[in-house]
Image 1 (tube, rainbow, N blue to C red):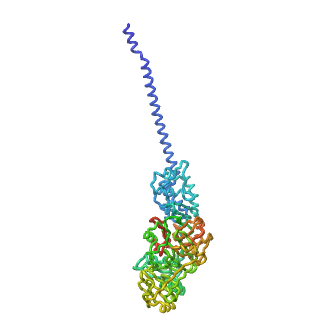
Image 2: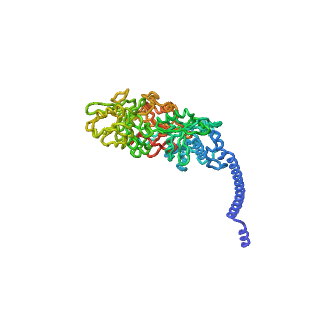
Image 3: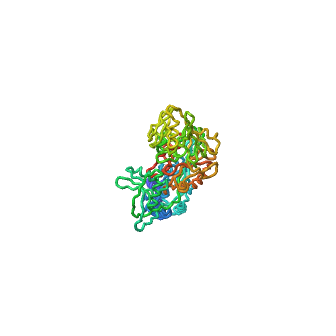
Length: 616
């Protein structure tokens, strides 16, 4: 009985077994439910993902669509916008920024963009170059892109159609020229770099009129044939700056020929005579009828780069002469490097042989006399600027007391003049007929008839006379006698006391501001004033700082330049009180810390000049 009862007890499940059985069944039930839920969740995720992809594919802008719309908005010719993407591939915000900036031709500003203080957290993952593209895009005015509420630019996100709708309004403003970019960069405590670009215009169109039949009596003037293309291009550029806008270089065989025209035979004779006075020999060649191509005048953009210099700096502002000679030319960057300068810009006007035009004084020594109607800037020993109209007085005094006025310094004798030559001219006097007196240490060594080419003594000078001057020399500059030369430059309207400490002087023009009043002042060729050109300016601000401003030109995609009245208006933004226009055109060059920061307009790049302002 007891055994049977024991067996019945053993067959009855214990509480532990019941609990275990319950939990096991419940677990199986849960597992089955999870499998079904997971399948359901997975299925929902797949459907949602497909839906999202479908929506995204419909909401983003493709490369081809963006390019076509951008071309239309900016009114650009096909091919102007770079297409470095795949047609149907979605365009990212970074890629869109690059495309717009390049279409505007604003990519030249990338070198001025600072990436040291990036305000957007998600730009740190980009390369330094890509950071510049995005920073430039969001610092344009108006900005192409702006950060979201979390401070991110999302450069690698696809551009959505809704975002592009917002961009269209800005791009349309850009197309109207309503776009600009400005930056200041502190180089050191005394020097600040100023960069500015404004406006936009499509590529310039050409209005072409086909001539009907032969042009009876039309001729071209050939102004030189060169084996060296660079010399030909330089000559053509010189002619354009003198007003011969049709100057062109044509290659025939092994020669590069420079031609202007066409003209009627009567006009050609007049132009040829004018060219001869300007130092160019030309001859007529017949020409067949050719299409007349007239470029339209583009409106904007313009690019400027400036340097603000504190005169209290230990650095010195000077004028440097090319190769330290009067009749030499040298690139602005080469002058700076040779002189160990941190900064340089081109300075005064000069003739084709490098002869400086107007007043030039370097380190207290007068190297060229003033020109009527031009204004000058003077630099004192402590970097202060003076502006004014100067007069020149020089004379030779013989031992017997007889005197004669010197009217030229280190230039060709124009007839009936007494001209002074020293070693700054070069090794020898110019090839010209006249009377020459060689003076060494104040004594006349020889007075003789000469055809020029006389060696100039390093410890003396040569006086060269023609006409009445030569007669005075024969009579008074006797070998063995002493002679003195006195020269002075003095202000026409200003107190001499303000100019007595001046060590460097350069004349140019026109004067753009005088004692706070806008100009222009002075007597200058009308075309220099009214035509858009590259410009170089030295100015003095209300705060007493020195401003050098360079404006690029003759490049419709980059900068078209400014007229003199437009330049005056632009200078008002810098609060200048005195400002002088310097040599511009192809000479315009801005050099800083080993780099040229503007784009010189000559086809072959930086031009050789006669002199430059330098800071060292």
